[in-house]
Length: 192
Image (cartoon, rainbow, N blue to C red; front, side, top):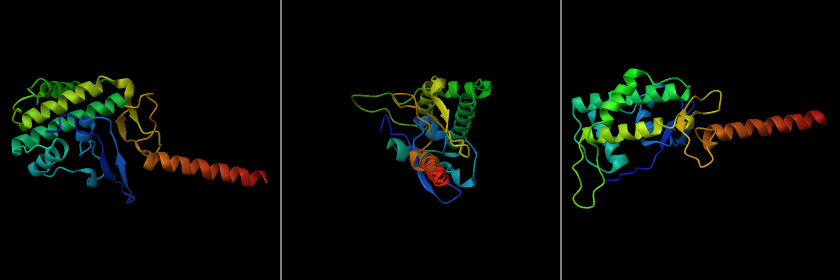
């Protein structure tokens, strides 16, 4: 099992651009499987098999996911998304979202083991995600919204300096640099 999976995932924008987004938190990645709403193409979970695939791709484990586990995963995902939105806008985390996250975080997770590993279950995986959410949301000063006025994607700023500005340099950061370059060129042409 990958106890500390890397964060990040590919997004497909409505304009057809595919871009890499590193949320800085596995819990935020979990929520970005569709918990924030947005365009229909951002919903990645249409049934239990999709959640099982996410566990396999992110943690390298096979987990049985039935209808109840699927509903629980979506419940936790929605609570994390609601909490992230509140924190990104400097608002208190809604009590219902906090209670849901706390309930899952209090369950047994997948502890690191030197010997025989603990068998992963959907509930243990959800507890692992919830604990990451608690740790990530415990740093509200590092939860950011992309500085691009037309974006709104939220992330945990894990940069050493705490100065991350864009959801992705290859998308919003690059578009900002192109706009600045064009503005400088236009200003230079006017001076001539």
